[in-house]
Length: 223
Image 1: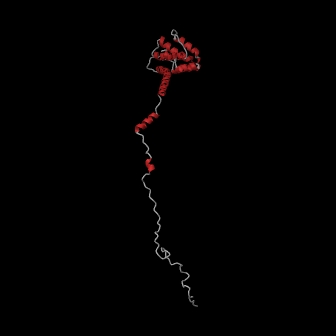
Image 2 (image 1 turned 30 degrees about the vertical axis):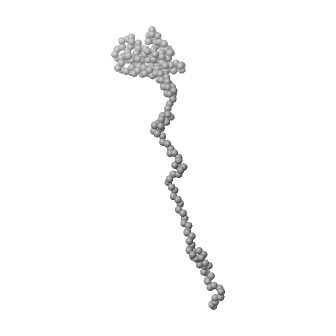
Image 3 (image 1 turned 90 degrees about the horizontal axis):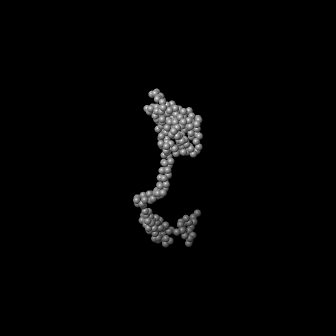
């Protein structure tokens, strides 16, 4: 069957586009002269400082002399603190000096007692001198007119637990002073006897007597 075109009706197919304009042309068929808008490139940041940044002052670096002066000022100690510390140190040294001297004398006598190169008389006298000083340190007051036996008897009466040690010491000094010991004679007293006497004296002494005998021994000022 054939279809004849109807007069007065255009023969354009239905699938054709309504407008023949191509892209880039306006409605009249002329090229579009409007420039295409391209994306703008971001502005690169400038490295030049702004006015606000240029006006800020740079931090000042202290000079070496100023830094040293500040440090010395911070570590400065008041003069009165140094004076007070020196006075306290001097007082401590003075307080400890009698005890130090008494201890040195005691050690020297004990060394003489054990020194075999010394004569028996010297060894016996060293033990007796230490016994006398122990008595004086704890309040004893020996008389010059008393014999060693009388002094020893008076001391032994106050410390009966150490009476045997006292007898050995006084026997040695009597034998060395009044007898004629032979070359083989040796003192019988030892450092342990003096230690026994010291312990008994400290045990029977009061608190004040112990303090004076330790820190302010009277025997230091007797000789």
